[in-house]
Length: 448
Image 1: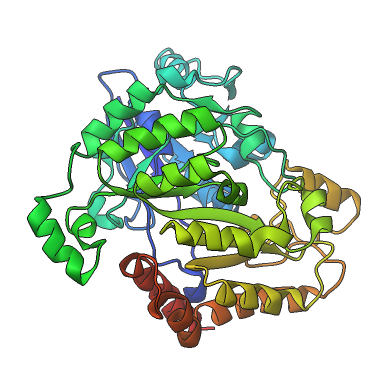
Image 2: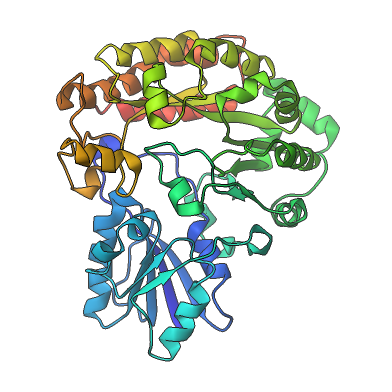
């Protein structure tokens, strides 16, 4: 039996085409739990054309909301050829009946527990319409993802690792908790170590003498040359402090550079912050989201304290760790002045990289249900749910002001003067990593 697993790519406008391409783990995880004896192929439409004439016994598609329409078109092409199609991921899980108008079966929730059953049902000619991952996957049973099915030539040389799933926070715009559950599920440290052993060698990145010479040019250069770079994709790598400290100790053994997501509050936990610094953390991706406590409370992120943002940035930078900040605009307490306030904060605090997005009320989230009840959803074209288009009516500005404002933030943050002040001007933090990233986004915004 031959199975095609497809990651669709919607056709983007030129100015919306992100240049920093990362690989992914969702389909490699599905491939890893596929029963033996199957012929498997992963197709990433961002880089490869889909061959609709390719012979297959089953097509599996994953898609987030903005890509769902493209996923449906792909499914329909294969169905025309008599090939059964199954769809999974957050969008199909939230709207299974919609997805079933285009595909033969839908996997709701995590696929690892039900995918083998689906394959067996297909073999018997008894595939059901809906498969529900009724129990969250035991993290001790996570397989090693089939990274070998991805062509690494397509992606930035950055390895991805998942150490936890789930999140207890109930941010109204986020579908992560609904999909992965409202508690942290930590993988055993021994299993994470086993996976890291397949990606990197323990010990120094290179001969200490050579490392010292190369570090004269830039301290990060040895790691880039040896491709000792890691991205931990967890929603919050610091959610469980004891587990996080054990993980940081393990990462230190591999002498690599890594980044991940954590709340701004880690700046005020000396033990955690020290562990991050010693483990090779090159960046923390922090969701500042808003300077308005009213907005933060409404979205379920009242634990953020805007009055301490500046202090937090200083503490993290003092440990040699960069900050990748994200902000959400178009919230109910946002006025047209919010765009310049974000630009000023990013430049004055010298955030190493920062993006702002329009709040996207994905189907099934609390924000979508609230805005729909208020009659403020103005668009149900899922392709526009990409965080650069306004799909709801904001309260204190027009749709046009919101869409122009978010692009103004990007242009302001990635202007040449901003890049100089934040990245090039000393004292700097990991300039090799951040200059390349910022310059790519500068080139992107020149088309606006």
